[in-house]
Every structure is written in C-alpha cells, then in structure tokens.
Image: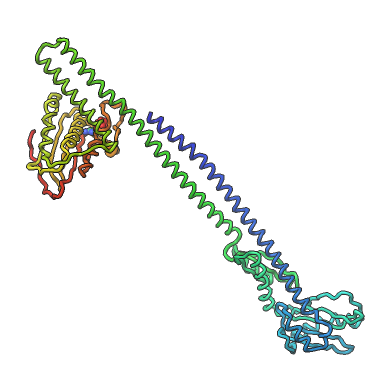
Length: 531
Ligand code: ADP
C-alpha cells in the first residue's frame, strides 16, 4: 500500500512536472530564437534609421545651400541686400559666402562671413574659390546658354570645399556664380546636430549616438563590438559617413538583455509552479499517509478489541457452565478476565481521550498533588500482573518530591501508556525502571525499558497520531498508535514536554518533564525504593 501511495505521488509529480519541463525547454528555445530575431530586427531598425537620418541631413543641407545660393537678382549688385540675405542664410559649416560676377576682363568678387559682414577671403580659400569658379568663367566666355542652374561641388581642396551655383542674365548666359566655402569641423558639428534631431524624432528616448566623419574614423571605432551602422552622406561630403549606434548596447547586447529579462521571469514563474506542485504533492502525501494510518488504526483497534473480548467470553462461558471447579483455576481465569478488561478500558480510554483532544473538548482538572503518590498507585495496579509475566520493576522516587499542580487522572493515564509500551516493546529482557525526580525546576518522570528500542529517525514521528513504527498488521505487536500522541498532549497541557532517548536493540527511556510553577528546585537525586 505504501509503495502504491509513493508510486501514485511520483506519477502525479511526473505528470505535472514533465509538461512543465517540456514547456520550459520550448520557452527556452523560443526565447533564444527571439533573441536572434530581436538582434536582427534592432540591426535592421538601425539600418533604416541611418538611411532616414542621412536623407534628413541631405534634405536640410541641400535646401539651406539652395536658399543661400539663390540670391535674388536685385541683391546681386547691392552689398547691403547681399549682407541681409546672407544673415538669413544658415548653411551648415559655412565660413564664407561669395558672389562672383564675370566681367569682360575682371571678376567682381564680394565675400561675406556667416553673419553677413563683408570679409576678405584668406589666400587658401581664395585659391580654392578661383578653381571652383574658373570653369564657370569659361562657360561665361563661351556664351553658352544655361537653361537649368544646378549646384556644383568642388572638393579639389578638401580643407575648403566649395558649393557654387551659376546665375544667368536675361539671355540665360552665365553671368556669375554665388558660392559658399565650407569649414569641415563646423560642418561636421552642424550636420551631426541635424542628424541627432532627426534621430530623436524617430526614437524618443534619445539613446542613439550619431557620428559624422570619414570612413577611417569609423574603422578606428569599429575595433570593439560597439560598431556603428553607417551610410555615406549624399551631398557635399559624399566621402564622409554618417554612423549610428545605441548609446548603451549593441543590437546583440540589447537582445541578450531582453532574453535575460524574459528568462528570469519564466524561471520565476516555473519555480513558483514547481513550489506549488511540491506543496500540493506534499499535502496529498500527508493526507494519504494519514488515511493509511487511520485504516491501520481501525484494523489494529478491531484486532485489539476482538482478542481480549473473545478470551473473556470463553472464560466467562466456562465459569457459567460450571466447567471450572478448582478454586485456583477460577482465580486464574478471574485474574485473566480482570487484566484483559483493564487493557480494554485503557484502550477505550485512549480512544475517547483522543477524540476529546481532537475536538478540543478535553478538560484538565489541575490540583496540587504528590506525584510520588500517583506513580505508586499506578505501579501497585501493574505490579502483580507484570510480575506474573516475568517483569521486574525498579522504582526510584526522589524523597521528598514537591507538591505539583497536576491533573491526576491524565498524568496517571500518561504513565499507564508509557508502562504499557515498555511492556509491549520489551522483548527478552523484562526489566522496567520508573524514576521520578526534580531537575532544573521541573518534575521528571522517566519510564525505561531494555527492549527493541527506536531508530533515531523514528523518535520524533512516534508522537504523531496513528503513527506506528512499521505500522499495519505486519507489525508483530498490536497497538493503536495513539498512546504517545496522548502522552505528548497531556504533558503539553501541563506546560511540559516528553523526551525520548533510545538506541535500537538497547531499550528506550521516555521522560515526562513538567515544570514546577514558581519554583526553582535544587536537584534532588532519586532514592532506591523497590529493587
Ligand atoms: P502503539 O499503540 O503502537 O504502541 P504508541 O503511540 O504508544 O502507539 O507508540 C507509537 C510507536 O512508538 C509504537 O508503534 C512503537 O513502534 C514505538 N514505541 C513506543 N514506545 C516504545 C518503547 N518503549 N520501545 C520501543 N518502541 C516504542
């Protein structure tokens, strides 16, 4: 039966745990796949974002240059209007704006700083400007008709990149150019700010880093895992890249953080589930064990009741029919009937007491009494039958024992249960010792035998209701499994406890320890009363 119970619990646990394990494995694989997909998705998102940001930068850069270089025709010959126009222009990185009007012999050049102030162009810038404008001067001299005017970029001098736009006269001949000379560092800073604003519009938590520069700069930064996703700029700085990356982590790191977060919660939920299953299995096991013990109890008690009752009936019938005539036989049968009736009474008392304890109806009548007196009364009732069964009882009661507040009947019952057990589990060596003494302010009543003893692992369990070591009909010695549970309850009701010391095969000693209210007693050693 026990094995069946254990097996069914194992099955229940397996049925609940196996799907959970399968689920966990599936969840793990799903999360791993999700991690890969998330990294890929994040990388794609960054790629799309970098394209969008490059487009935004291009659009803003180009339109600001268009505005600056589309000088209204009436302003071309007027320094004040030109200054005003350039004050309103905001080309990223502009260090000089200029207008060149081609004459027959000479160029008329006006130049301004970004604030619209007239400026003398430094030598290097001037040379770069001449190179950028020269081709248009040729076009002017050729008198070519120019239907569409487009921006052209001259980056022959990388330190002074120039964007120029021709303007034409009424006959659509090139009459001159307007242009802007760029400063690389300020262009880098200004374009980066445009890029940052654009990225911010796309990701509000603004955890993206934007860099603009030549490819070498990105190569140097790509040594670690935190590389940038890059795309070339589309205007003026086409040899430069715009790079983007997450401030804190690479797409793989982000995906892994996500994975860990999900895995952590999955593990938490799984642990909670396993805990719940464990508790449920434990509760079921306890219930099954209890019901097993109860059915053992019923079978044991029925057996305990049936055997003495049938003996009493048989001896009673003998006596009623007058089949026993010898006075010593009559006495022997009488004693047997008396002993068996006492055992039955004891068993029934235990059962009744147990049911009172279970329903919390057990009442104790405490009164000052002499514990020695209770012990002697019980022993005198046990003495004759035990001696006849070959037992010797040694009693050591310390003199004088103090008066203690006890429920006399309950303590007597506890003692009877302990003596009953000592007799039942004594085996070959039929010696029992009963000692009563005071130690550490507590009355101690010890019942010791030299019988089969109790395994250390069982010593706590024997105080549980219905618990019997190797319980069931297989147990050679019959019992209800209630005796020690009742003893333990009685002693607890007196504010004390029961202690057991035992070595298997060497007997057991049960000690009732009952505190003596309001007193700290000196140790009183027991005196030998009956050997
Ligand atoms: P039972 O009616 O089975 O004796 P108890 O509650 O009195 O029920 O005891 C519980 C179990 O403790 C017993 O089944 C027995 O195995 C063990 N036990 C109790 N007293 C002794 C003892 N003196 N020596 C060995 N084992 C004991």
